[in-house]
Image (tube, rainbow, N blue to C red; front, side, top):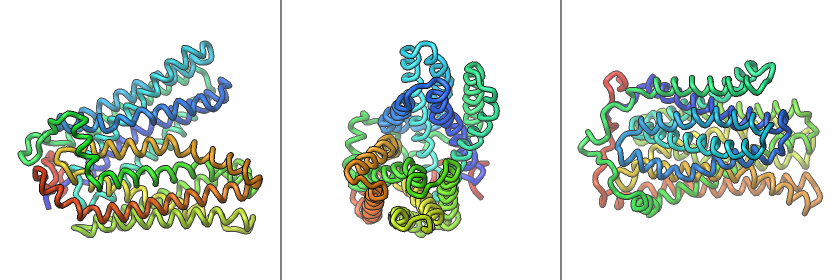
Length: 452
């Protein structure tokens, strides 16, 4: 097959995700804490703002269509990062303003978090499409793992560095640090992405920019059975994944009597497992030919099944007590989560070009919107479900176990949908035959970015 992106170019794309994560973590973590602790606002305030930044990402398909129509992804990536870099400092300014004028501060915060959501959606959607178009099949799993681990690194490095820089805390220092981080992130992302895309999409005669109106393009994508099934898979799996995130530490404290420090370490163990799962997919999934895509589908399905089994093991621990190996179960849950997540992203890259031609951005946008909605609802649904279960069952062990069992069932439903997606790949041949031919070869690259 033709040359795709080199490993260095993939790492450069990962730097864009690192920059993106650096700004997002300040808005969703640092500002969250300052609103609640330093300013004394109810926790629901940052909760609504964070949910709003997910909600606006329902527009991802529209932004993806814009990059399809123009035939270029880079302007949308840089434009999204610029919007994100504007939203970050505005969110910090709004947070400081809330301490003096709550109404005015909230109005600015709504605008700022909307900008953050739009920036993440515009940049993130086009970034994934760029990877899907330019990375060869044998490197999709590894490239997805690299890019996502670099985003997590952006979370970690920024949180630690900003935490040190914020001591001692002052409102002026907060705005200054967020502004500096946002500016540096935009600069790094712009330099990292420059030159990677190579020749414009329209310069390849086999690739034609999308000229259809957005709603026509969206209906075309939604008419594809495989695209619809994969959308459901993304929504159900990410709903189950995010619902568990906010329940593991309270469960460890309420049922196993863990201190805040111990439950935080347990959460860290879960995330360590996620990273290991990502690495496993990156290493094992790097194969050439049809085997690469088959491995990704196997990991996607198997990771969901394993996540369901591990959720049941975590739930069973409440009935056994302190002797139950909770830590190994949580670590295994993390590994399973990491495996299916990265395999799903790799499969997403593979499926982006399957179906109606020149609709990669719309297709990726639909899946990104499904993920954003699932993340917005997941944490809320999980916590509400536990509260309802506690009220109805009057037993915290049964309450957590029932919710974890529902989440396990959701993972199994996701596994069934993953199998349906795999089967659907063969059923789309008739759709592809009726649409303009899309070459499976990677698009033209700058010579220095092509792999040997």
